[in-house]
Image 1 (cartoon, helix red, strand yellow):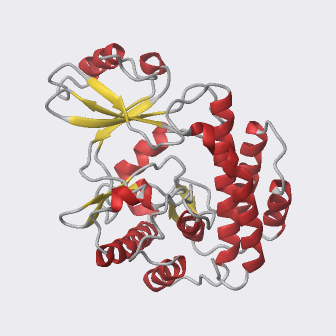
Image 2 (cartoon, one colour):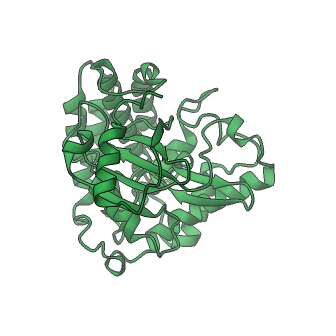
Length: 345
């Protein structure tokens, strides 16, 4: 079987035999795990054990993005907390092996819920229970004292939101290849209205339902995945972005939500916010700014992936449709900017 793009199994086998001879007991095979829109994720097996390997995308890589060391560090740090994460096996920074840094982690039981078909087994009561668990895990993450898990220097929380707005503008400029109506207006508004942040916490940076694994028996979130944007900063940025993924574009067959959050039993975005406020004790009355920023951030991410696709720098199905999502995301961000003092999402 031909290995998927970006994964040289012979080179990987040689590296593992030299550095972790205890880990692999047979010939390796691998498959690209679909669904990721940024870093590449592969399921790896030697016929006896399964792992997951993460590496940056092929080609175009923006500065500060796709940092394998950060992902490996944070899942290692959270191993003994209430936040479910896979066990980290190893980090390789030698780009001679696969052409880019990568890390290896255990394969965890569970599935992401990306489409209504993925949720066919859920009852309405289970959908409601899972909604609550999704928020609870986020609140658990934000409750972890960074210093106690060795992450006290994981980010620079002072000025976090100002830097985030500037960073995502820089990311946009690095991937800008066409005119995008409203995106500069949204950025200018965000930059001029940055709120005062609560106390800094560990933030995931891309927390959503399809970035966790869910088990059926028992119903549980078995792992939180995709930590590439994690840092120390404003916890409400995670909550605002979760609302973006939950609400999406507000359309039938929504490409952001996959139609999942509209299924019977799943909570509304307002219910998610209320649960988070109860669990965290934080004031969420100004969440509209964070939702608007979440739409801006997602628009920039989508535009970056669109750019990589048009230049042949990424692999997988569905990328050709992403470019059409950028401007609708911007429009949603501008709409959310009108609710910055109400807490509406």
